[in-house]
Image (tube, one colour):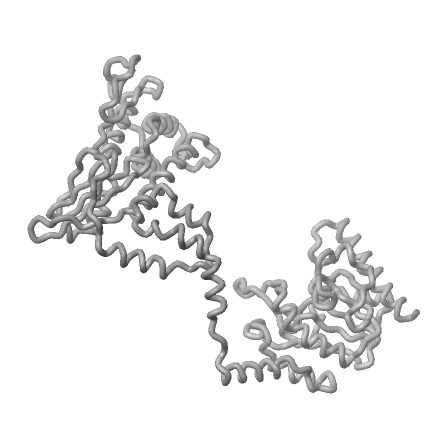
Length: 475
């Protein structure tokens, strides 16, 4: 057995050197006992006999970075874990990418813990000014890290606070910066630091940036664990801020300023003009009014508004989802693949498209660009609600006896919900004004079904619903 003692200073570099030598000599992990600092020797530890060196193995850069962090963890088995993984890594170079490897997952967990501890040290070290010696101001702080991170954090604090002398004391190690030079000393108990006149100002600032309406206690304690509170001057104010948060949030709500009378009047007038029923008395006039629609953002990217078409006295209104790519370019509803499929099946059941009014719940094409293509995107609830205004105007002009709602979006616009369209299809529901609504699938759904059997079944259902609409009107 070989005993390798890793020093408390320059720990990562020392482990790396020892591991490289062990690997080169072919020493397996089971033949090594790792000790840290001034630990007592292991009862079963043997000498330090070496073997002839062999050609050292190449180590991935990602493992070097991992080991440089894990070496500072407080786990007494960290060195053994790293070397055991390194021993396997030389035979399996791709092991660093194996997310299912338990040993690698453990090392990644140690790495994450060390990085988190470093972040907390950056965030929660609070300096207090002490008596100056010479021309440079002097400060001191106390911090209680979970891991041996003081040494690797020396460079950060030296760069960040290079214009003053300071000391960061911890139970494990003391970091000292004097006249631009960094040194390390043994750990010590918490020093008796003087009061700092600026802490009152800092606590006042902390209180004033606190938003009681956005208080999330668990999230706050996750980022600022309670164990750090005793060393943070502002933490003394946290219990009171939590206790008064609800009352302060109500006060903020009551103190919210109201709109100025002139501005309020202008907004009210704009809303009144927007919400008035359209003045158009025929479909063409309604279409001209809709060309300037800006009720939702969809008008920005669409080529044009696509209103419905059909006879004014049509007894049946068919409502789809929204224009597709071809409808957006042509300015007419149901001329693309879904519309062609609809025409084909409607013809099979004797439904003459020239006798019905065909439109969509949403009048502008919603899409996502993919190169030269425009991929269809389903309208959201706000867009459906905004465009319902135009659909209602069409209904007022046409006044159909029956509405055939094709798909979830049409159902949502006409009945208030598009949920469960597969179970609701083939059934009649009633609109608020008493108009009967027959629910069915959208023909684009038939084009998307990948399974042949399921596609045939959906097509039969759709054909039956169209036949039901014809029979209902004839009856």
